[in-house]
Amino acid sequence: MAGRNGLVIFIVDDQPTALETLASDLQQYDMVESIHCFSNYADATLPLIEMQPDVLFLDVEVPGRTGIDFIDSIKPHVNFTFKVVFYTAYSDYMLDAIRHAAYDYLLKPYKPEELSTVMERLHSESLEGNSIRTLPEEDASRKLAIQAVSELLLLRTEQILLFMYQPDSRSWRITLTDGTEHLLKKGLHADDLVALHSSLIRISNNCIINITYLAAVENSTQRCRLYPPFDHIELNVSRRYFSQLKAHFEVI
Image (cartoon, rainbow, N blue to C red):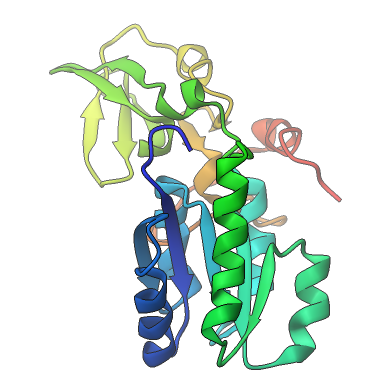
């Protein structure tokens, strides 16, 4: 757990009382660095990618989506590992949780000793050097240097949303996940940008995206659907680059 003083934990639960209770109980453990609470999976998606939590406590049934569906949807888009603890009032989900390699499982209302058992396992593994985060430290902290017109941008890969070519200025524009945009210096080619990181993929002659934020591509139109809060952005994969995009994934 290099670079952290303890566990970063996400909780997703649509029941405010249950969420507050679990957060309060977890705060009692010295091994916990921070706790982040969400009432639905859509709100948790982008922070999860950016903050790379160590442990997720997921209510199995949240309106609009199950915790199991959520895990299935994000796995292809993250480059770090995390532990999942499903907790629910319905024991029927236990088998599905096990099949999805859940780290542990709690039934609501859980007993303090049951939560303690989960936390002791996490603490024991961290002391033994079994890091919860498997992304190499040099990759996690590495920044990319990109020369914009007005400044040199020092960015982590997850801060980059997309690049769009601007014909009028004959240069590329970068859009960051915080919504800011920067015009890059002339002379940068698409190949230069794609070479920065394996998650940066060209989808058309004038667009390169960070596939971390790509949720789906419609078969008939090649229209891209991005994860919230970027799902309002209209992008299309050109036929020329569609097969190259698919080659980056294990398509079944």
